[in-house]
Length: 532
View 1 (tube, rainbow, N blue to C red):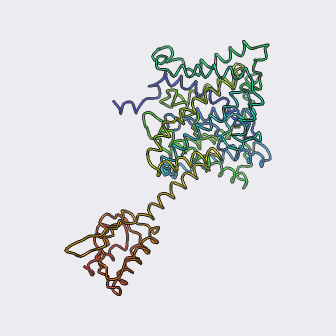
View 2: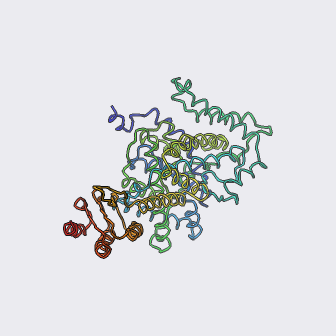
View 3: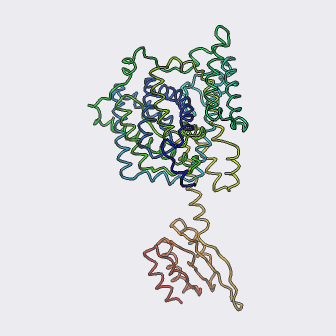
């Protein structure tokens, strides 16, 4: 039964996938526009990359629940690249280059990098994103929209930071926006209740859709009063008067610039950073997937590469797999690629036919939807679970969260990973062996049982221990539990063997025949035979 559920066909979960795609679509629209705005790109470029991320990447990717689109983590890089390029078309050439590089990375199987990030760091990333979403959406809930949607960095384009924005917003509170937020949040909370979920109609109609429709109707009812939420606080999708005008918003890249040095450097930077963000998101998304499927990471890099190539060719921003949309998809019941693909199609169709209706959606309503997504990513139970797992788990977890909140996604991840690596190295340094005193017929022997893996980092500890062994002692060095011993450690033991002769130390070496991973083990085996 479990195997069957893990191999759902594209249309095997169609009802839930389509309803999930609608939620992802509602989340994606303001994020696509906000990221484009923060990147200094045309607003429609964000919509293009959202469409490409949904349809093109969605069809090629092996991820069943991941959703791709313009990434907040690339905003600073994209902004700098656009400013350095003479024209936007030259920047698009860099996006095309990044796509080609990502395809190559996938073909050379670079996707394995994603498996080297510890779970504590990945879970820290998810929780941090959840906290940031909540903090960033609170000003929008109050009707203060100076910071673009989709901005996840600590220092904001509006000159504020994540926390000062919460103080500044108090001078710009919109009563109408706040009322709409509270109504929307009430609907979303109601839809999470068990008795609502048992009603078949409400299993089909998602709470976010009800919240959006209600928000539009409430705001229309506010027309003519001081509570009315004006256009600057609503979704601002570009509107084309005709179909030809719509397609006129697409822009071709500058083919002649593709081999320029600055374009190649910008493309390589986007490819490397975008690939890391994608691999991190894939790892996180797989953990959120209720069916616990494993995404083929090399195929994902190829899918992202093709997506970026297409996006760059037609005028879009770089795309990556993104955790906000992916988690919204999973939480809304998305279980196959159909939800990601359908959300991309919805973006295209609605941008062509009903942009004016989408532009009636208050941002405070979408803030409610995103805050619910953020809460599910950063539930208190997750923190309790990590803290109960011990300091080797919760320290990298907390460092990752703090790092991401106060800097950005990649810096926070690097900090968490660095702490995790330091803990491994420290534990390795601290516990290269277990020491105990053995007593046999009145004789006392110092028994040093070496750990499973001894790297060169254990040198200092081993040297210090051996140098403090008193003269005339009986010593056993036991490698029975060891799988790998670094040649530097073997050399220390060999030197100790020579030194022991002059200090009247009786030395016994056992268990080295079990160690098979070091080239010098054969020499130590011979040495052990000579001693024994």
